[in-house]
Length: 311
Length: 254
Image (cartoon, rainbow over all chains, first blue to last red; front, side, top):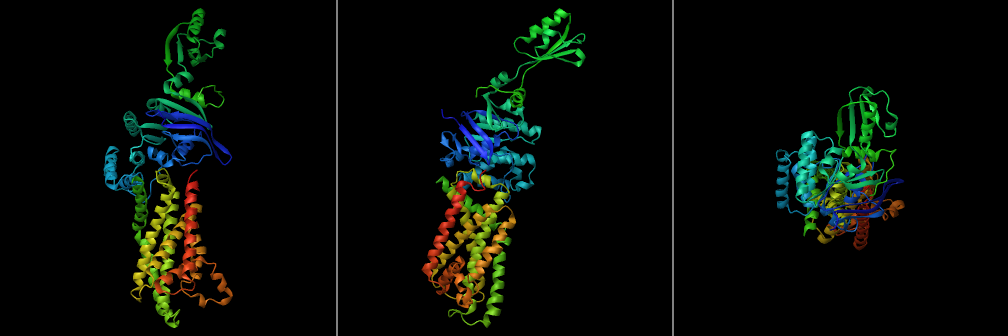
């Protein structure tokens, strides 16, 4: 099957600054793909290249097999873009914004009107249809951005930080909406700063850091690969000094010796339990925290950590 | 055809933009043309003898029409594109499946329509003062359309280079207006002192104004075919440059 997005050896400079360095990855049709990275890592630049808002010299970028440069009209017809910043025509009302968008993508007026009506209602904007976009609240503007991107029923929806600055309730409603959209067959490409959002929604994750792809895996695989269970042992009486055999196992002593903290790896738990038993320490209780995508992300993007991950 | 719907939509948006603020875009040129005709044509013109056999007021009208064709088309496209860049909604357009050729042509047609509306308004105002038959209607259409499309292109090019709103008016004040005035809106080349008469032939506005004057009155300071050819070459060059700048994404793509 032709991938929805296929990027191969993409390198992009802003003057002398290398914003993207040999970026290669694919997003399959039907994926809910999360594209993560710290600020300035290259997420928006990648999106700009894919949507035609940025030039590039090296690499090959395709949408459903069509080259974004030579077949730009076809690729743009397939993409719906929700940009990070509001970029509405300042002279138009909410409804006009949707109608003109539909028109640009080839919808005759009557069809565009019907589609705009549907979307205004789905996004709770019907009452504000005649309002200029400047009179809408931040949440309404955000919804209008998404509605606009969906006017032409794109095969792939690209969202650049769609929930930035959005309140919790709206965020959850948007999540539900995006899940439904994805279930109905739209490929979703999402960048976000909320790692929890990516973990909840995305079946695959790509991580970009300093212009390079440093991880690309199904979400659960990435978490397992990069982060481990975090174990906390609470002792009945304090331990003032860590037994020698535990020092090399990265076990940390906390809460004035009442808590031992470590990551589960290479059977650390039985070795810690054995050492404590031999010293006569009893355990009050054990907490195990499952790793999250955030743990994996932080490990991946921490500067001092070196990565050997197959991408 | 789907792409024509997109193209028509953009043309309509460009027209909608200036019609929705008609008090700023259509009324001012019509009112100021009334003042020009009244002051220069009626009051001062009576002291000037005929020019090429026409009363000065009649001689003035084609020049005024051309001046507002140029001004209207330039203002429309330069402000439209610059505001789109400034408000960043140009990105909304750049991610659509419209070709760059269609994008440019649609914006130019917006400029053309505005200048046609303005020119018609100026001509209608002139009918209150003087009436004369149009000598060569096809030449009128040729010069008005090509000059308007050319200055619509100039407007787009300036809007791409401009970094601030002031840059748009700097071009009007220091380049376009002086060239129009020296190009013969108010005078014939015969009235220019002979020492600087040769400079006029390097002014493209001279051919535009005289081309329209030929179309409306049947007289001109320069052969109409020369004017027609120069205007055509200017249009092709400016239009191609504008499409090229869009294609390479000059100040449009990052």
